[in-house]
Structure formats: structure tokens, C-alpha cells
Image 1 (spheres, protein in one colour):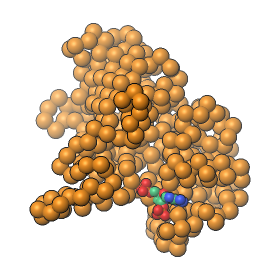
Image 2 (tube, protein in one colour):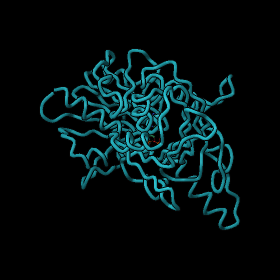
Image 3 (cartoon, protein in one colour):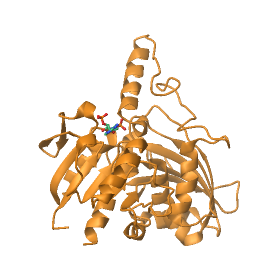
Length: 338
Ligand code: A2P
């Protein structure tokens, strides 16, 4: 690779793709050529990159030769078909879908947690973790390193942007419809999302959990490199546009006090502690996470029901740190290898 790299963003018209472009511009990623790709439907349309407008090309007819780094966020089936083609043409693929995350020869990397894993990528693919796992790892890895985590009990409060652009539109449309005494008509979600909460993300599995819940189990173990960690997750979709929140209860191997956990988190990369123990002294998606990079942690307290239990409230912008920002950070790691 030369001093600048040729970058492709696949799924550039989507909620994550457009944020990838924004973050590449914000961080002044050293781009030679920037190719923006989507389906035939939006080919010929334009997307913004800094002050420039780029013309979207059709992925199906694009020749990937010459691309150095490809950021994929166009869904699992697109990644499955095209990521290996881009890798075979010489690109390092950073893939935001879940299709390769479980593969032993594909590293699953959170930039602040296990950056060294990104170097070993025999298939030329690095997987970007699920948004809920991402922010959980940024907050928990420092604690796991210090005292070991045996078990994680988590309930998520996930925003609709994680489902994509159509879900953002659905929340807006349903909210307006209901305020005008009209029928909210669910299309993307199985039931009304506006003014409601839905205890369901992904597909239902035989064990009664959903695929989004089991991602938290598998991905946590892979990223922390510890298959003994027990994870019990409930994924809930809430009528918030941007920013996922998580109520996290952990049981550690050795006791850690709330004060020690706070000190560890204050020193941790990518974390911002907001923990005033007063009204408004905690992070929320709207007041803190939306549009910002850090993973915010508050409500840090010792669990009164368990001798080695600790409670945390973890909030981050699921489109930024949960997807686009981490992907760009991984691209920066690849760049740093040269
Ligand atoms: P398009 O605008 O052509 O549909 P989101 O998750 O926000 O819904 O975005 C999904 C992204 O993936 C969009 O950029 C979308 O492009 C893209 N995409 C979906 N299907 C394909 C496909 N078959 N080939 C290329 N890009 C696709």
C-alpha cells in the first residue's frame, strides 16, 4: 500500500455506511480513492463525504481490484457473497455483518480491547462486533483484566437505528401517526415501536433466546478470549433513534469495589464515566451518546444481592462506536501496519 489507501464503503447509503463516510472525513483518513457502493436501486444517487458529493456505484458490477480497504455494512447476504471477492482481489475487508464473526480464522476486534487480534486475518477479513457487544466490551474489558468476570447478566435498551434506515423512518412515522390519532401500521418491527418497548431482536432460537441475545454470549467470549464467561442477555428494542443503553450486572472472580471499578473505567480507553449519583448525573442516549464517540458508564454500584456483584449502566452511539467508528478504527490499525 502507498501512503494513501483506496477505500470502498459497501452499503454507503445505509445508516451505518453514511456514518462511516462521516467518520472517515472527520478523522482525515488518508484516502487515495473513495468508492461508494450500494445496490442497483441507489446506483447513480449521491452520498456526502465531507464537503464532497460522491456518486454511488452498483456493487454487483463493480471490479474490486485496486481497493486496499473495504468497509462492508450492507447486511449478511451481501457480505457473504462479496467480502470474499474483495479479499481475493487484495483488499482487507472490515465487515460489519454477523456472517463471519464466529469463524475461527476471522478475528473479531474491538479497537480498544483486542487490537492485536486484527493482525492475524488469514482470509483477509476482520469482523466488526455487534453493536451491543461492542459497548459492553469497551466497558467490561478493563474490569475483566483486573479481577476476572465470571458472569454477565444484561438487559439492553436498543435504539431503532440498529435495525437500519427503514426502522428510523418507522419510528418517526408511527410517532407522527399516533399523535394524529392515526393507525401506526407496523412494517419493520412485528408490533408498534412508537411509545412501546419490544423484548425481541433477531430470530428466536431453540433455547428460547434470540439471535441478538446469543451474539452477546458468543462474541463476548471470543473478544475476551475466555470461553468460561457466562452471559445471560435480554435484548429489548426501545423507541429511541440513536444510542443503545445496557443495564449490566456482573459477578467477578475477585471482589471489586465500586470505587475501584470507577477508577479503572476512568483510565480506560474509549470510556467516559458519568456517575454523579444525583438527578441527571448519568448518561442517556439523547444527552450523551448520540453523535459522540465514547462509551459512557454510570450507575456504578456494588450489587447488594451478591458478594462479588457489580452493577453498571452503559450507553453508546450504536451507529458510531457500535459500528462505523470501530470499523474506521480497525482500518486505522491496518494502516498502522505499513
Ligand atoms: P441501497 O440503498 O441500494 O438499498 P440500512 O441497514 O440502513 O438499511 O442500509 C443497508 C445498506 O446496504 C444500504 O446502503 C443498501 O443500499 C445496501 N444494500 C442492501 N442490499 C444490497 C445489495 N444487494 N447490494 C449492495 N448493497 C446493498
